[in-house]
Image 1 (cartoon, rainbow, N blue to C red):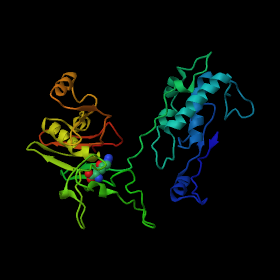
Image 2 (cartoon, helix red, strand yellow; image 1 turned 180 degrees about the vertical axis):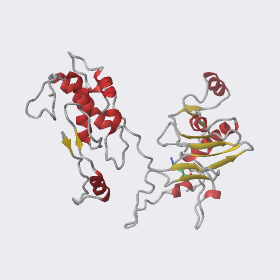
Image 3 (cartoon, rainbow, N blue to C red; image 1 turned 30 degrees about the vertical axis):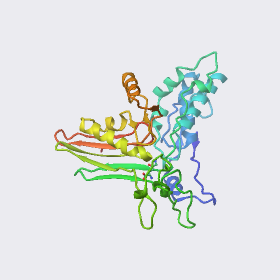
Image 4 (cartoon, protein in one colour; image 1 turned 60 degrees about the vertical axis):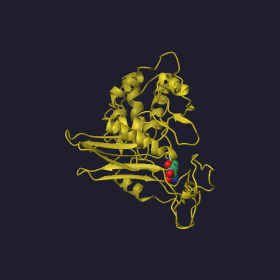
Length: 337
Ligand code: DON
């Protein structure tokens, strides 16, 4: 089997730069049914799929010499229809899960075409019954990227830090792109108090101090943060509108209590912002006893979905240990190199 990758063609029908380069570098994969091993593991979907399918189907093959081209094909695939179907089902599921343009996506090709992996997939094929596709692990759907505020935390070897929270405020900001700029304008005016006592989009109230005026900047809840003690330093921050401040506060307290980055970003959160007179809390933020006790004291409690997307890094001067973590509630990635 010789298989070529699908070319990436722009909407005008031209190859883009990346595609041209990847086509140049492309090595065709030669698969023979004798050993089902590609001479070069490429990332094109058909090649991988056929190889994975072959590996899967391999156990069902009946050796059968073919006189015409014995050098190339010593055995022929002869499998029952249902086994072929089940092998295809599993290989196509993996296509959906893992494969994409190799210029953009890192694919576990070696694993997918290994005989061990194939043996694993084969193990749940039943000889007398179809496997519903819904019984296979569903394809991972990544969370959509944020359409509003985001945060990045960085620390280098010397301890230099970046803590940057970036916002267009609500989804897609004002939803307006001035022609020819490609820049989405924000709707940050909502961070001002439009009228004393009238809450903004996050329920925050205020007075003339934060009223709209020429050349004035609105209050912001964004809290990109550096922390430093005699023993170490940390950098953290998160999106989350008015709840940013309380999230960073809880993260900061956790750091001073010895928390590493993983702990800082994942501790359960609660929030109170004066008005509304409600304590919002994530599942697990309070024990049952605490909830009972707070209610008895007159607090109005409201459990809400997990929120925020904190990114944190810590560095312990004594042990030299660096920890980095991305909030498990949302998208993001943390890496220590
Ligand atoms: O500066 C502020 O306080 C707001 N513009 C932040 C908005 C925000 O975090 C939205 N994110 N989820």
